[in-house]
Amino acid sequence: MRKTAKPAPVVRMADYKNRKRNNGSAVWAYLLIMAVITFAVYLNSIGNGFVADDTEFIKNNISIRRLENIPDFFLSPKTLASNDSEWGTIIYRPLRTASYAVDYAIYGLWAPGYHITSLALHIIASITVFYVILSLFNIPVAAFTGSLLFALHPVHIEAVSWIASRADIIGLLFLNLSLLSYIRYQRDRLFGYIILSLALSFLSYLGKETMIFLPGVIIFYDYATQNKNLKGLARANAVSWVLFSAVCVFYLALRFNITGRMSTNQGWWGGSLYSNFLMMAKAAAVYLRLLVLPYGFTFHYIIDPVQTLLNPAVIISVAAVLFTTAVIVYSRQKNRVVFFCLAWFYLGLIPIANIIPISFSMMAERYIYAASFGPIAAISYGGFRLYEWARDRGANALYLAAGAVALILTVFSIQIIGRNRDYKDEFAFYSSAVKVSPGSAPGNKGLADEYYKKKDYETAILYYERAIAIDPGYVEAHLGEALTYREKGETAKALSAAKRAAAVEEKVALKKPKNALIKFNLGNIYREMGDMDAARSAWEEAVELNPEYSEALNHLGIYYQMESDFPKAISMFERSLRSNPYNAETQYNMAILLEAQGDKERAKEHFRRFIENAGPEYRDEAEEVKRSRL
Image 1 (cartoon, rainbow, N blue to C red):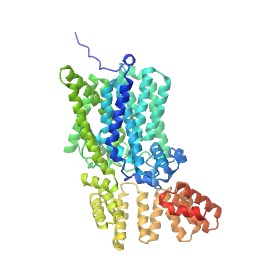
Image 2: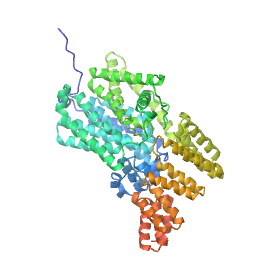
Image 3: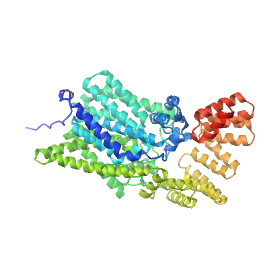
Image 4: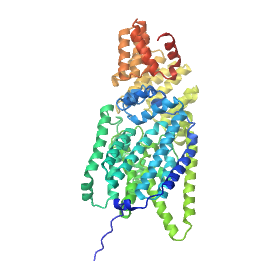
């Protein structure tokens, strides 16, 4: 007689209802211990400053300085970064920007306050990790262990200690809350819970677009927790699946309507879809290594382009992906909930796999903040089962388990405390990047910028040249070198470097779309060298590439004002303000010009708007306006 295969274990809702109620005080004790340990380990991150992208999204982002601007964050990409609209039209993460506005209302530009918020959000996200694991396995100790491993895993340092990476935390926080609400809906069949879950899913996308794998999480969860075949599963849950998919599609349509694009238009990594696929296999293998053996962290990982599968690194990477996929498939036979947790990792990788080229980087630690939850949950459950197995065989399992967890968390904590120092300031940030990845062009260019700020021009040129040697098409490095020669007083070399930057930009544009930001910066270099006609031409090209480039329009307004072409200057200032009404510099320039033209009332209105949007960098001008012009 043929044996019938036993179905994989699932969590049945009826069983869930009949389980013994967990001790509430014990749960709160677990959460308190986790929160205190996490806060203590990340304590030295609070004193860090703003680094890299924090400048565009926080320091120079005038729109976050008024809470009444928060509705605009959801409707206008121009509010999401500084006046450089090249950023705003791509990075649409309104909940992150809203969190910055709240921070600014409390802390101004005191960086430790922003770090406190990021750490608090990470702890709250780790609490949701606790409850999701508890809902999946109903084992408080496993939930506690999993939340601690998640809170202290070194791969999450970037998301927590780099303020600009806060979007990943916000996204996972709402994703987990959405899943918890859906679990309650499936358990209690109360319609309100699925409505809440759908609303929270939308918020998770507004936190970060990479959370769009949530509908897949819902489908896999239903598969893991319902003892049905695929046909019965689809019939029972079709409405839920359609609703979650519809919310996701609605978000994508909204995002496209607001930003006007779905990708960065950078083209495939490696130049082709095939090369992009091979490079992502390498990136996936690195992600797996970072989860299992977390070391060698950097803000810029180098994934060299490959054009053939017959490459040792690619073969090893594909083997690693296939092996882990086989483990996931095998786990389905043993425990569907474990299968769900393990599959979560690859579900989370789909949005960052550059199937549509959307990322500025091939890979980054922050990208797997959400994806890492699944394996960590599975490991916490597996560890508990291993503890039970050892206990049942008479081993002193409690001490062994506690010792193993303590050792892992101690190693993780030491890594976190050390890595947090890399975010102290931009010099530490880029120095660390170059130390770990000396072949990183962005790392070398960033370090060159820091030496430029320190007026160590010789060292700055050295690192600019290193960046150019690594990536001859790195226009920003050429521009930086030109500015550095300008500051040294070597005008001929500065002009030569600027012309090289222009030539390189034209060459790069044959493969990628021209970059308005590069043209804008090139114009600034020409202006600093006194070649105003060349500056105007570059700014006009920037506006041609991006008609809503507020800063470039402002600079053109200044140019025409200097040329005494006042009607054209006013026209440029008006276009600049239509593109970005929060541009304080343009408001000031418009007011000064109108005042000179005798239009006192309009001038006063623009002065008032300047005062509303002016940051600390305009303190002297703001005081003068308040004193003598209003």
